[in-house]
Image 1: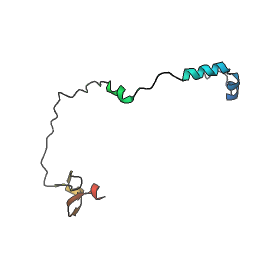
Image 2: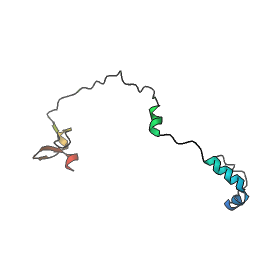
Image 3: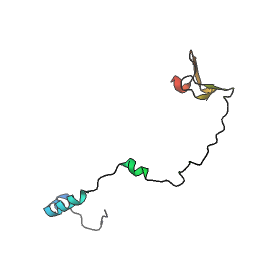
Image 4: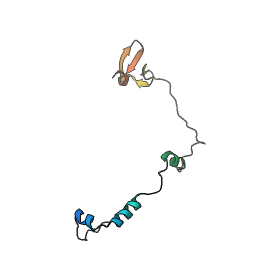
Length: 100
């Protein structure tokens, strides 16, 4: 809503007294819309993002075997560098994240 900063200022009490009952009813009816909000998931299904079709693409990732200075955490099963080793338990080696 645009504001005219050069217009004389009126207090809220002045505005309340000047508004007629018909004007207030008209404003209320304008504010209440008859449109029902649509489900966001239904709206999102109709969007097509440019360049989003990856059905013909192939992902090529070079997989390396576990190196000599790496270990597999027995808790999270991720491969970490030896500097991330927190402790050795009965179940195996545990990384710092899982030991915390």
